[in-house]
Image 1 (spheres, rainbow, N blue to C red):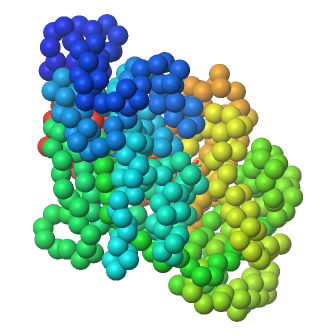
Image 2 (image 1 turned 135 degrees about the vertical axis):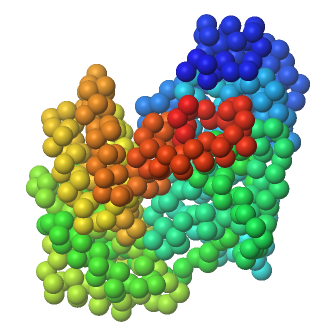
Length: 486
Ligand code: FAD
Ligand code: 2HG
Ligand code: ZN
């Protein structure tokens, strides 16, 4: 650990870094003051807290400095300087990441992109929106409303996550089932490398088979290879008609049948397909009583909920009716609520989107964001639930339409954090790896799962990843300890 931080730096700084894991000097601050405005430099401990603490309040660093540049040129100067001084950096967007990737492990400098928040333009002919990395996802969609377009990505954190963070994590979300991976919609990027070089990968065209597609390396690299400063994103047209069905079933087997029927009846109109178990639904009902709920939460923990959204440019009533009839005839649902207007649609979505918040309100949450064959969803949830025993509650929910399960284990007593962690890790990840699932479907590896990368990739692949990292970031200044273990 120490050698990792003290590598190739001057003896004076080296000494300091061993003493306090800190390499920041007054002369460094002097340099940053020479290239940035005072409001772009944060050193006040109370203000630094939010940059040091992740959304779950589970990962906490102790950075003494956050920088908030508003141009790519400033980002470039910062990186070039840090590279020359071997100062470590954590790129940060909305800080809504759930794997400890967006906050310092120690005292790394936080490089916040939130001041790079300009929408640069929209080409109606191409359907491409050009944005700076610090634009909040929701604000881009607000801008696109007048063009009847949207970014083909939606997630519960849309009000605070930044597009740079979305790209750096290759975020999945609730529209994956409709649009596929976000990386497919990223046409161009501007990336600043640790050397300070501004790499122009800013294409706006869709079809381009001219050698290696380097931008793909940065998408999903979680801030370990370069800092994304701009993006060109292929937008999608907003659907004229949308309808949500929220239903309750009395077994997981029925959820699987409901899933299949929805896919069969909705066809190309399928816009989202999510599920929750009673533990998840109950937690939302209990923790967020202000939300409008279609059904009262029950004490019967064998209930399950499915939320689906159908969307399209034609009216959806006849599809919805046929789907409902099929569900009813097959006796698959106990209850079903259909949205009749936008407000109801939003209310139904809020239940699903707030599971994460409700869980976090209740205790310390251990999160496992996994991909596996959907018929195994409840089996793995039950195993984890049994393993956690009386130390906590296990919630199962997620994007069932694309095979992505979220396992949230709420640890009631924070003092039992270590005990719970030992019970769950690496157990859960090993179980998933053994059945050839993915230990991170959409949130990334961050610092939580870097040490388990061997459960996702073989030795040769990890070695190649290390070599790629070395090409872009030979001094390991960018997000050290994340994704690839140190
Ligand atoms: P941050 O959290 O700030 O950073 C995430 C990672 O990206 C870090 O490793 C960071 O170093 C790196 N990074 C950030 N900006 C840049 C940049 N400009 N250049 C290079 N690296 C950068 N995720 C999903 O995939 N699907 C979901 O459905 C989903 N739902 C969520 C719901 C809630 C309520 C919350 C709190 C989170 C959810 N997330 C989900 C996780 C999170 O919102 C996503 O990972 C999101 O993409 C992170 O964006 P951000 O701007 O907050 O990034
Ligand atoms: C979701 O789908 C997010 O709600 C968050 O990906 C999942 O908190 C989680 O585990
Ligand atoms: Zn998710």
